[in-house]
Length: 330
Image (cartoon, rainbow, N blue to C red; front, side):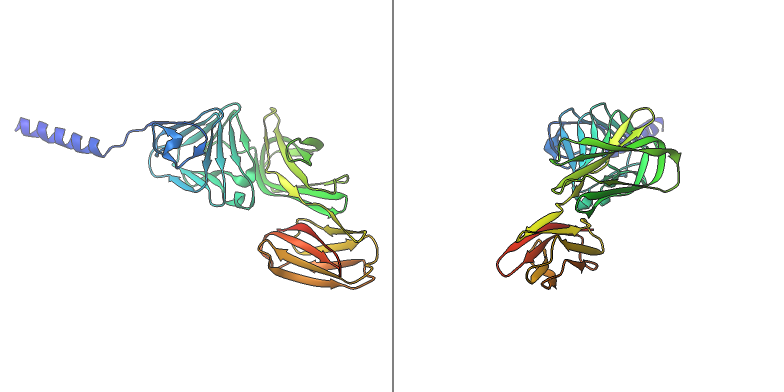
C-alpha cells in the first residue's frame, strides 16, 4: 500500500512538473523587434515571468500588441532603448511587473499620430503612454511608482506669421519643479526659450501656455523639458509647426493657425492682383476643399471641420503660377 502511495505522489509530481514553465533570462542581441526571436539570446521572444535585459546601444521596438499579462511578473531591465512605434503598440505585463531604466537607458515613443494609443500596461494599469513623452533613467516604472507628470494635452500652433503658441495640460503632478520650453529649426539642436513653474504636487488639472513671439517662419520644432525638484527630468514628444508663408507673384501669403482644428485664416500682404484659387488637397491628391479669392481681397477663411486629421497641401493658383504649403489638421 505504501509503495502505491509513493508511486502516486511521484506520478503527480511528474505530471505537474511537465506542465510548469520556468522563468528564463532573455538578453537583447542587437537592435530589433520585441516579437522577433532573433532579437534575443537564447532565441525566442520573452514570455511572462522572464527577466528581460535590453543592453546598452540596443533598441528593442514594440510595434504591435504584445500580451504577457497572463502569468508571473516580468522584469524588464533597460540599459538601451525600449521603443514603441506605431498605433496600437502595447506591451501588457502582469501585475507586479517592473521596468527598470538604468542611467543612460530610455523608454521612448517614435511619436506621430499613433503615440496616443501606445501604452505600457501592468495588470489593468497603464503606467506609461506615448503622449507622456520619453522616460530616462535611472527610473523604475511599475504600478506603485507614481508618474512625475500625467500629460493630458500638448500642442504648438502658429497663431500669426511670427508667433507660435505652445500649450499643454496635466491631470496630476508629483514634485514637479518646472517646465522648460525648447526650440530647434533642424530637429536636432534644441535651445531653451522659457521656463514655467510647475505645481509641485497636485491632483488637479492644470493648463499652461506660452507664446513664442520670435518664431521663425520656416519649419520649427518644440519640446517640453519637465524637471523634478531633485533635478530628474524627462522630455515630451516633439511638436512640429509647419512654415508660415508662401509667395504668390510677390505677395506674401500667411496661413494660420497651423496645425488647425476649425478654421484656417489666409491673409495676404497686399490686395490680390488677380483671382486666386485656394485648394485643400490630401496626400493622395484628392481635392477636398476649394475657395476662390476675388481680385482685390486680402484675406479669406477656410472651414476645415469635418476633414480627417492629418497633413494636407494648401495650393494657391493664379492664371500663370502655383504655390503650395503643407498644413496639419488636428
